[in-house]
Image (cartoon, rainbow, N blue to C red; front, side, top):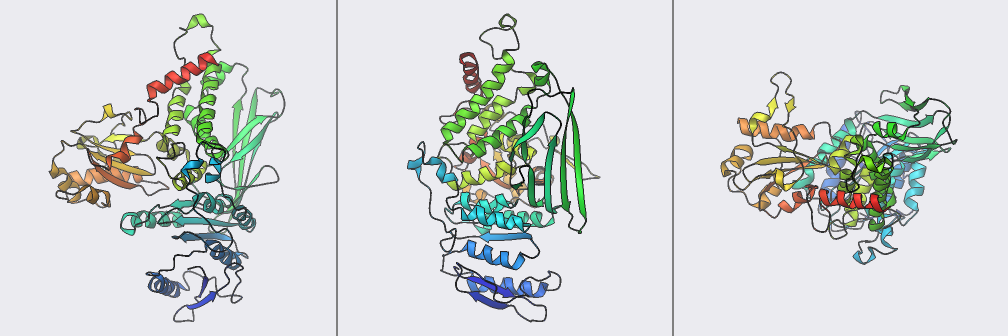
Length: 545
């Protein structure tokens, strides 16, 4: 509820002692010690405390929340050691510092007020997050709201401290319980470095100009990371310090100093030699369109916090046009037709990725994505690992109706999936079954011509309603080859992923099919371009700029 409760769980007590702080605005420690306990020594008391909380508040009618008071209280307990705080939020915080209010306002879109919907209004979140970063404390938030809760503000706690934000809109235990459990488990068991700092150095003539991700910057170029793990990425902008780089080779070095979970202080250093060229054509040959697209997505996620969706889309299109126009100008006009779009071989994916960004929840229109959902995607994009980001913007779609194409190695259990298909309706047939993987969720699309026996074989469901399929938890396989191969394919796309992907089973023609169709990004959807039309827009921009 809106008060702060401490649980004294000393090992010599048979049950936890509950200590209540009525003034949650200015929390304090009710006793000087015994509030932070060792898991192994006090496991029995911790389990008992969880049982007490469940029984005492499982059916409470008090929906007032005070997350800032709870986090401040936990800060007081942990400030002498730092570490990781995991916060579970299920109601709208309406009490104490940093209390939130509803911000969903469709009338604000395309006005100068629009960006405020995606920005924390109260400076308390960043100020207190900075204090947590200073004492090497990371905050991971598991947000399970029944309605709007202002993700833009709450996620600042995690952003400033290098933590993770997990979002479960309209949380329902039967639907989201498996996902919540899996993501808590990964959070606690993944390889983690503690009390980390990272610095990127450049060779003579170059410098780091900007940093993007979830951390704090100290002394201009030192990234402070209370925790560091494999599920986060950051990017650094590099600019010229001098007009020319004086050598034919320059260097980039990234140094990470951290403490392992076993208490060892280590430094990890990566050094890369980068050739310097005077020919822009050689530069284009070495470009990576996917890496360029990932950086553009992070820039869009930051820009959308200070401007409108429309202006952000315009900026992305302009950057793509400028890059491709520079390449076109390398060649004389007589070497290529005037009406032909010229793309460097290494940058052919860039226009497609730019279009995918505009069709994603990052830049979709206000009628398609709530403010909380968009704010969550902004947070995720700014720290999402490269492979996850590529799948989020351009998902993989696998045909799984031909079981011979799903190969399971008998010795290792490794699963080989069939080749992925282009994301267009022309790729799917009513006689087929397709698995679409966007890195955060996955969808199993079943054509209307598929026999009802297939659902019985794979899931044990006879004549299920659309709601039955939506509530289905895709997990263990049944004892038959069809179920084993299909479930193996689903588990293969889930493998080693920072997100536990819920798998939605969708039949052709069911209302739930509307969830999948927007991911077919090469088709025209509502008012957005098809891929072919978007290439025409880019080509026109190149010719007229």
